[in-house]
Amino acid sequence: MARLLWKHAEGHPALARAAQRVEAATLGVFWWFMAWLSPQRASAFGARLFGWLGPRSAKQRHVLANLRMVCPEKDDTDIHALARGVWRNLGQMLAEYPHLGTLIGREGQSPRFEIDWQGVSPDFLKDGKPRIFVAAHLGNLYFSAAALRRIGLPAVLVYSPLANPFLDRRVVRYMEVLDCELISKQNALRPMLKALRDGRSVGLHVDVRIDGGDLFPLLGEPATTTTAPAFLSVKTGAEIVPIRCERLPEARFRVSLFPPLEAAPEGCSDKEAVNILTERMNEVIGRLIREHPDQWMCTKRRWPKPRMREKGAYDG
Image (cartoon, rainbow, N blue to C red; front, top):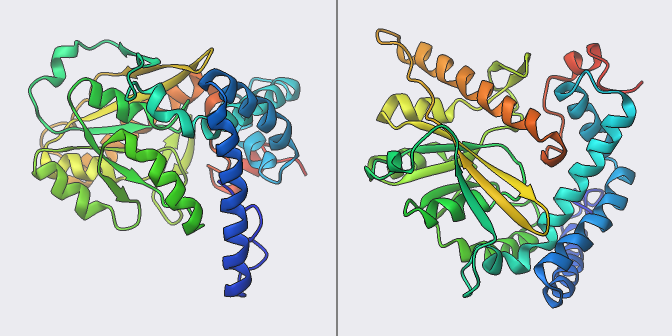
């Protein structure tokens, strides 16, 4: 979520705090209104609203640039259509917050998502071993956690706190229906390591830019990428399992689980193993993004700016 009202108030703490409260209150009113609608109507309203607002925002240039990197074969008309899909999906996810409990089946209704086993048997998770689940920001971010709980494997989730603390508290309250422990993205490595060693799985989104991170290929282009999943796997022996949430019509979803990443060859150093696993992770994540680029909620620049300019992803 962007700092809608207070990004120009930095350096003025009192003004920034007041603007943060206004921003949180504005979205609070939006969510109050969404709560009066059915999940399907709320989702549709969010799609229409953000499908109109998003292309007019400053973030649109980043969305378009990212999509040009993902789909270089598409013309500008198609890229703009995909970008509108990105904004519609984001608006749907925001509008669905008040209905999250209903959508995941926590309030007596049947869950509005299905679980799809892609090339693996459901039995492969029944051994109780902790695993590292990695995903991209696709569909609705929270259904992967709901699916893991549904199959009896709750995971500790790495969560990026919002810059607006008043808004962050509202979002965390909505996330309570997931009934899982949250780990702040800041300094998350040690808590994730402890969780795995205690026998608990962890889940995190790995498709965002890591400023100052190492470069690994993503859809054929070098991109700074987190090596945390690979490091944790090397240290604990836990498998890295890709997982994806796909949005379907009428506020329904499909959560797909994929085969674990192949382990690094024996005899590799830890550093070599981390690099190999990170490259394999990006290969799968890139493919999942490519399959549903209109659902990829990446509103910040993903690849190094010089390379994106060189590829013509940015206009001007």
